[in-house]
Length: 299
Image (tube, rainbow, N blue to C red):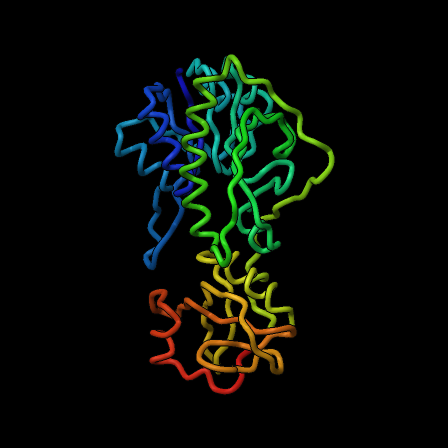
């Protein structure tokens, strides 16, 4: 098929590669505009933009798709279908209607659970044991369109969002290739009105750890926010990111250091398995403790 690909972060890159490997023609790649990044705040293209440019593909980075010019340019591509995965811009109806076979979205949840921007983070933070990928026909509502294909995946104990991200990215890449191969035979299934939840964008204010919560919730917060933005606490006056955790036995006042990097919570305790000090790389907890004195209590 002649495909317009629309994506921005690392999660989307394997999908672009899979479409090319399957023999589809990429009419153009749409991605978010370059953003300032790094210490020098130089503009850096998105991962999809960089990958598409390396492949010699046409890349378009509009700030909006609501203008007449942007819509005319999109329509002129005469695509059979648009494949959208973590693009980051709302598609107006004129864009949704432009490809001959519509726009298909790869969404990293089992819809209607976790519609919205951060389904992986929210699934882990909520303690879900299962998630997956849906191929959805896009419509004007937020992730409300009928589902063409879905595939479930267990969330492993103590799995981080980073690890789940990598697994579901590959799953989505395979599933969209299957969907395009079988498009004439797939029957869209409307989403249920029951079980709808919304995965709101992660607010950095959610990253501060409150040790007065149950250990299961603290561990889910740490794993769900790893690697970005990273849950954090204060050790003395130093802000330390906690990037991996598991629930363990132990009791004490919330925030009490029990043994090693095990911290008491309101109910039980959490063992930190990976952490990152300011200005340093993420390390296993044992390595972090070689240069960090936790004291008797952390905030």
